[in-house]
Amino acid sequence: MITFTDTARRHVASYLEQEADALSVRVAVVDSSPLAPRYDLSLIAQDERGGDDRIFDAGGFEVVIPVDSAELLDGATVDWVESMSGSGFKVENPNLRPIGVGTPTGDLAEQVRQVIDMQINPSIASHGGSVGLVDIRDTVVYLEMSGGCQGCGMAAATLSQGIRRILMEALPEITDIQDVTNHAAGVNPYY
Image 1 (cartoon, rainbow, N blue to C red):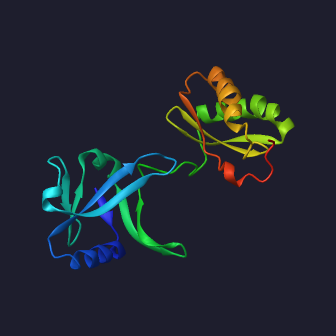
Image 2: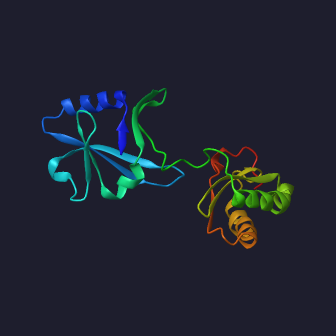
Image 3: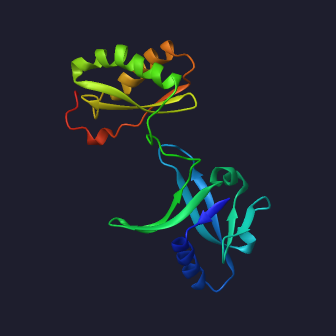
């Protein structure tokens, strides 16, 4: 189900040693958004378990996974990482891959790129902007704006009244379009 690396296991054991009560490690998916999946790792007492929780031994300690997180965490790995910005547990989860990992492939991705290249980018080029395909999940398209569109005060209107309309009319199988642009990092917004 879920694996703990040796380093993560040592840190969990260290936390458990500091507690007087017998505790378990609860691992749950807090937000399954592909934009920024979030997890909760916490120590819980016996009476904090749910009736449907999945419980297993992770090599020296008990792990409790809420039933609604069990499928999402199947095959995930918990590691302990240390970096310049801090240290802590990190969940590597093949079921919740963040947006933009890898290049979108398939017929829908090619069709979206063609509409972007032929219709959308030429119309926003006069403002120094462009749009790129970042990812497709099921029938949701994730786009990133750049150039004059990144940080532009009219970016939301451009997305909702222009880009969304053009893409959804051309490709009716698309159910939603999400902007994943970091608009705060725009260096030359049009407005």
